[in-house]
Image (cartoon, rainbow, N blue to C red; front, side, top):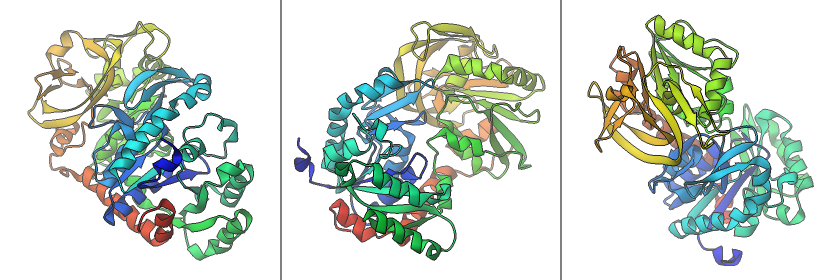
Length: 493
């Protein structure tokens, strides 16, 4: 299908002057804004890189941000919304997910040279979404100004030109030098790439907007681009699940709340948004512990989170001395919960004979559960529900490679509705492991897992996320020239 033939339903792409400039939030907000106006909207990100992923209704996986954007559109997430997903397993390699399915492991250099071959797959997914919608809001990755990566690009201008989708370039004023970022992008872009940009917006402004009037005028004067608006700092965005682990470096704990829960910040941490529901509980103090710091001795519960490289992060955990801290925590009567890879680490051994997540190898686990894990090439992706040992209802999703066996499985963590038993619990009940992500979403399970006060907020996290999307949409409605954006996208505003 040619670019001209794709001109049907409207489409608009938000690209940025760099990573973490707020593209994901802007797309989510625009999705909710146009959905609130009565349009059928779909989100799309051609290529993503994240270890925070979500299971889709068609049994695949996509980046967590696209699942949140689907929620903003009030539609279930599908694999087409993020057809290429890279899940980093090391500094130079990642697991490749194509249209929701594991498709191998690519080295960084190999991906850069071979990614162009994935463009037909990306366009296929985009065409399917466009056939379902009045408007597709597309999120870029990184920055189109990274012209050293332009050859074979499928994430920014390579996609925009192939699909004939107009672009709005977002700059982040909170970082500083936003004028230089936008004007510099204009200067380095290829003329044909530059022609795809219909205008710019400035994101994350704090204070009196009029103070930046001259700055916006200067950007327009130097680029000729239309100014679509100045977006204020969106405090509501902190209530959305984060996609990138960079946000974890901003964690602070020690609030003095009654129940203290911590999780070590593993080097390849995955799906750390599992613990977002803990943040809204008034009696819970939850924090990630960064490398170089010990696990606090006064924690009530230590959670070992998921990881994209179990053996590598088991070694990382030991190099931080967290294994010693964890054993001391258990001796003091503290509780431990391992989720997915964290569950695997709690066992007696972890083996990766086929090099599924890195170099082939094996290592002793932490020995707190009587189980052994062998990583395998098949990946389990499923939404599940069931009950915990105390009868509390639990739901979530599985997203893992590996098979875990051993006598500890005779004391399961949960019984699923399918009849399958999940996870394991130690004989004294203080150490548990599960393959279920999203454990803390439902209040009954949250109460059972946290312990202590049972009067927790039912469904409060999901409600908070949905309310945040509405607040962001309202803020964008006030800050942006929405009618001009709709016209650029080719839809009635």
